[in-house]
Image 1: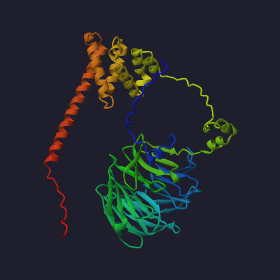
Image 2: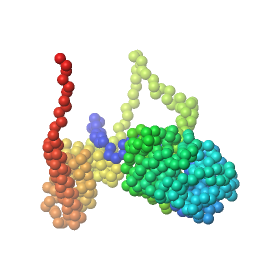
Image 3: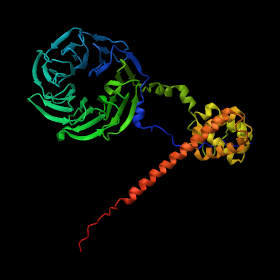
Image 4: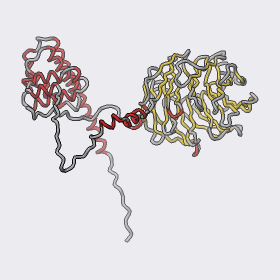
Length: 506
């Protein structure tokens, strides 16, 4: 009895998400903080300087939140109608915003009243951004125009009217103070130079453009249009590099990680996708409760903030990687005494006295050790085993079958025990990992309990479910075989392409 070896549970490949470095990185966020706003959150913008505060534009207000504050530390509410696009200047001291009443307002972060009000648009202003020199602003409006404003003097410098529909998004270059990009509902993205009168580049889209993002070096342009996220090479005249279609609803917002190696896109399908800017493949995904309108990442990816159509602001903080406590514990005298002999290597003349370790068995192992196969099967079918680790239940069944006592373990079961066994078989019989074993178990159960069919409505219903499940799987396999035959016929009918090798000169 003492030589009993515990049951060896085979390891199966885990189904589901593959654990990668990106998975570990993007899952290091705490439980989200939910903040209720006054309306749909249309814009989130982080201050480029410390402290890590961010502006949230919703309804007729712009709220400034601190890093860990759940209440706004500052509020700008001097808007007659819905506010749009609250954006920080590069030094974090000023914030500009558009409005439904066609006015662009400029605020000092330490004050309340507007420093400047820029009038000149005739319809709602949805896009405002500062140029790289910090002395000018660019705005885009529903009146099809985009304008450049002088911040110190509060006057309009120039105006461009090349779009034929609403201008809803845009961005400025961080390197060139005269370069900016606008996106419109006329399915085009235009690149403007403030020193010229006309656009210097036009990019055609198939859908209204919702968001544009210029790479910090200026070589790449990311655009969101419909369900697509597209990448354009600005250095080769706006050539399309990649078209990404990983959302099934309109993409509303784009942003880059602090390392510039990851691109994030938010959509009305309630998902945030993380792409690699090297391979442009999805490396991670976030799920949210409602459609997403705005997305922003804090410097060093310390926070990820999402604004939704249900007026909820979702804030996730990154967990701190504090290893100082572990280091202090290792320096403590008690720790040194505890591990003092752990790494000791015995010498040739040492006499080693080892204390036998008591073997602790699982309940099903203890019952198998005592040849109580029916009780061992019950233990393996307990809720905490069959639900979380079905592979253990199947391993116990396989061990009982190997011993040749599976019929004895299955016979003589009550209605409740038989119902539990049949429910487990129905759930996992189509799992390729367990099919071979559970088909054998199902056949034995049918042979043993066929004489008592119609005596229990519960068991009869489970037998019918098992029959339906097996028939559905057989039909599915037959359809797959038909498809496989068609694909084989197509490949067989294709002309073989023989590689022609050039003749070597003699």
